[in-house]
Image 1 (cartoon, rainbow, N blue to C red):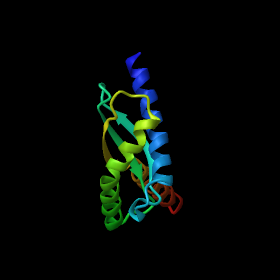
Image 2 (image 1 turned 135 degrees about the vertical axis):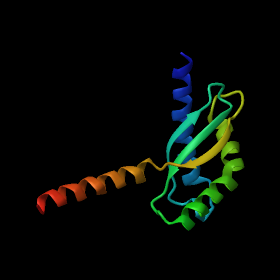
Image 3 (image 1 turned 45 degrees about the horizontal axis):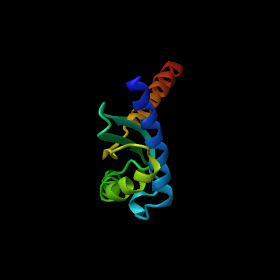
Amino acid sequence: MVKHRIGRVEQEIQKEVNDILLKRVRDPRVQGVTVTGVEMTGDLQSATIYYSILSEKDEDIENTQAGLDKAKGLIRKELAPRLTLYKIPELEFKQDKSIQYGEKIDRLIAKMHQDEANK
């Protein structure tokens, strides 16, 4: 039962944070950020929000992280009326590297198939 509730809260936070980033946060550093997942602690006091951006440049990644860290307070404030929780969780933003990892695997498989075709 508890895990089911945590999952529902994670989905709701993901939906709402995407909406807040799109409509309320005006920082140009967070334009184009997509929330890919949310992981909450069992007591619902802390949420890790995973995000992705299109750019792979280190400078863009650092700027986006800085923009998200700066917007944490606004995002929590905006989440408060949207969620039915006694206490809004502390937020932590982390880049989701699974997309980049998947692309790397795809490139390796394509290279392997190309090498086999050239033999």
